[in-house]
Length: 192
Image (tube, rainbow, N blue to C red; front, side):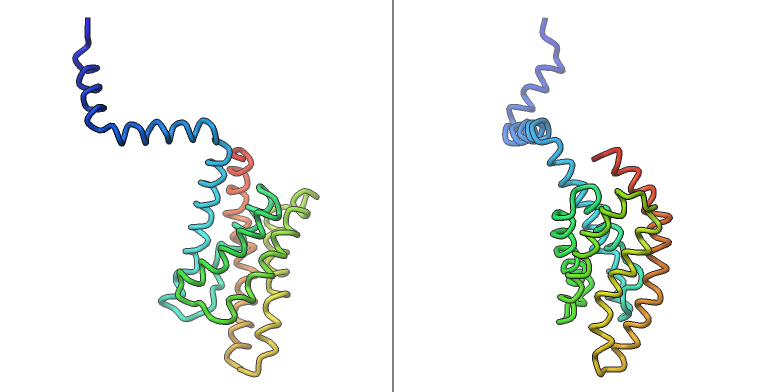
C-alpha cells in the first residue's frame, strides 16, 4: 500500500533534483566535518559582530571607543589557539575599518597590538585570571602598544583622538568583558 504523501514528496524531489542533491551534500558535510563547520560558523558570527561593532564611525567621525574586536579576538585566541586568534585579529582589524569606511594609513598600526593580545590572553585565561580582568588587561596592552603611534605625531587632533580613545576604550572594554564576555565564554566553552 503506497502512501499518497510519499508519492507526492518523491515527485517533488524528482522535480527539484538539484536542491535535493545540494541538501544531501550539506548534510554529508555537516556529518563529516562537524567540528570544522561549527568552528567556521562561530568564527563567522564573532567576526561579523566585531566588524560591524565599529559601524557607527560612518555616522560619527569619532574613534571607536566602543568595539567588540578586543572581546572576540580574546575569545577566539582562548578557544581556538593563539595562531588562529592572531589571524582572526589581522582580518577583523582590516574588515572593521573597511565596513566603517575608516580605512587609512594608521589602520595597519592596529594589527600588531591586536595580535599581541591574541598571544597574551590565552596564557592569562589558563592561569585563572577572570574574564573581566583579562578584558581590562588586554585593553591596556592594546592601548599601550598602539597609542604611542598617535602620541608621537605632531598633529594635535590625533593626540586628542588618542587620549579620547584610551580614556574611554579601557573602561568600556572592562564592562564589555564583564557583562558580555562572561556569558560568551560560558557559551563557547560548551560549544567548543
